[in-house]
Length: 334
Ligand SMILES: CC(C)(COP(=O)(O)OP(=O)(O)OC[C@H]1O[C@@H](n2cnc3c(N)ncnc32)[C@H](O)[C@@H]1OP(=O)(O)O)[C@@H](O)C(=O)NCCC(=O)NCCS
Image 1: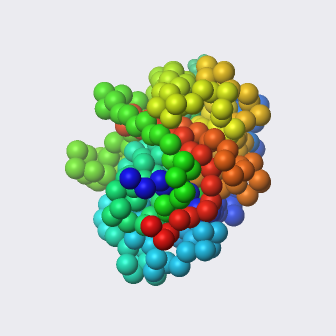
Image 2: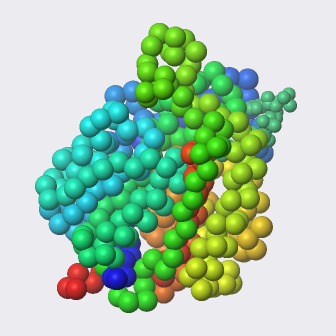
């Protein structure tokens, strides 16, 4: 089996910023409540005519440039999203076409906010097994388009954006060291966009009942998140044969600062090793982790040989984590 790593990253968020003060004009809320309960100060919103494929395309362009990889070299494009352009065709096909990735297979993957972790785990298998050499994994969302702007318990949380990573073979001992993925469909109702699929196809009734927007039982999701983030991080480190003291950087899903802080405390990792950007972006679901990863790399927070953990949870319910020994040097001659 080949070792697989991330050899380039990119991210993109739309220009328009929605602050907590802007939200005060829409629903009965205030800046202090939002910051205290979530840590979020602002989030980015795609304009009405911008589909998620555009965000994904912009992030992917930067990732390919960073990896010095041409679009024709890409063997597979995976887009993790819950807000694809259409039910079909897949967003990945649209993005591959725009990039000029003529030789690539393409599919979308849906694992809620854990989508990027599921994406890199999938890409890793294709490369490790020798089927592909270059896989582009993108997490992108336009959650602003499925928010109920009258529901103050959800509309304050989410934002739009995309992050991308190019995966290739790397030197032995580097790259992904372990993965842990999981699901529990019995918790599906805690976080859902109920209508628009085959159970509740779009109708006047579903629109009138607001069933095309995010429905969430926040407190239950919160409890699940704190427990699972700590547990899955411990498990994935154990699989890699590493203690928590070896971790140089932790990139958690960016849902709520209280969830991040509680799980980091549970895990016993120093807060200065944790990447947090949710104050500027809110929860961007599948885009949260790859955008945070790209920003951390560009800020110089990862050095060759560093141990990095990415961990997420989301709708499904799903969860996932991975451990990497960092290198950006690809090994394409194998
Ligand atoms: C949603 C969340 C921020 C709510 O925080 P909380 O501390 O659990 O708050 P509660 O739901 O208990 O609400 C407390 C009070 O604030 C009110 N409230 C809710 N949203 C509010 C808002 N935006 N502004 C002001 N008040 C608000 C509630 O109505 C409630 O009032 P009441 O006590 O009079 O009934 C929190 O539960 C959370 O982050 N959950 C996880 C969500 C998540 O991460 N989802 C994505 C997963 S990928």
